[in-house]
Image 1 (cartoon, rainbow, N blue to C red):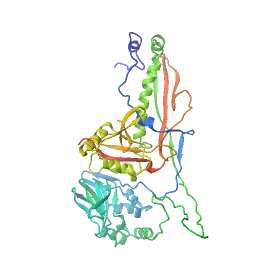
Image 2 (image 1 turned 45 degrees about the vertical axis):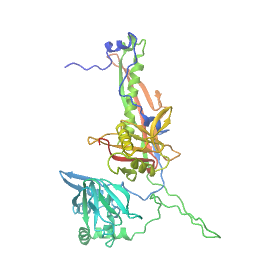
Image 3 (image 1 turned 180 degrees about the vertical axis):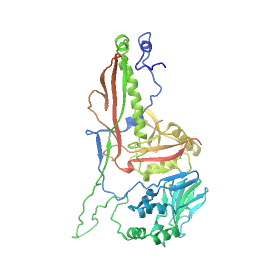
Image 4 (image 1 turned 120 degrees about the horizontal axis):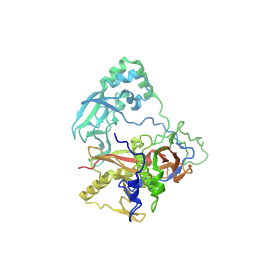
Length: 456
């Protein structure tokens, strides 16, 4: 078996030492807009702690499922995402509740629940999209939200026998749900004292004062006259704030000393090798900032800031919904194919797809918010992708990039090249390291439009 080379060969090195030539080119270099648009904050201790005002909201509000063929079942511990079952720490009891859910399927246009009817079941959406509507003022239904897999509704059936459906839920696509009927709830509470006591305690517990964002309320007095008693208050903080640790991307560059000794004119061989490796590291860095499970933006968007498309392709209505959920949106980020799909929808509706001037170049925009391309946003095999909208900066409680500057042998901010020695084969080795992460300071700093169809 032929031994694989450990460093650049002399024959390849000669390509930089004769004739009139270019520096080595690579096709993998992209604009990397995210790296340039994020404000970068120095994390001195390699950790950035996000302190927030205390909030009562727990969990991620999304239920997970397992499937065996066409059969779907809920993961029992995930039932604790339902507010009446929160803090129910008995696995066997959650297993019993999960086993009573019945799978049902609805076709597009079917009503899953009608406003005004008795609230007779808890519904978990396994697959598909569901619209939530309410009677409008002018004899039309007002669409309030679009729910997707992992969402749930009707949880009040666990604690209120007399409740009615306040909204209508209707399938937009083929929908698979798991339903827990009121009869099943009665059987479970009738034979299990612990569940009955837990639900009674939840129903009778006083609701702590909170804002519409779920944060602990700050008591204030306003509009008063005379000498009323002014309320006393304080601002509570999260006891265990999230901490973001810097991630690292590294590689070892091997360069034979013969190459750098004999073939270093007119181009520096080490410099060109490092240049291309640094470009590839920066490409990986942007990929991780979007897709990393720990700190990537696609995985760290709050469930309440995830929006589903109304019909599949990205429409002006969908992007308006994204913008309406936050202030000071700085930019959209989408796959180039997604931007093209949005352009087609604008053309189909006869809407002008405008642009803005950014750093001397024309960038497509919607409502004055620029739309930047990034091929690091995944496109699934089914032809769907996502669109991100971001507010940036510490002052605006937005999204920030994290790095550590001033490290030994630093050649770029947060990136170092360290000589590690020459081995017995006369190969010099350099350790190339980049340290980075990203932090979302408050949930509404980041929004994601999910399941965007770009292949239609």
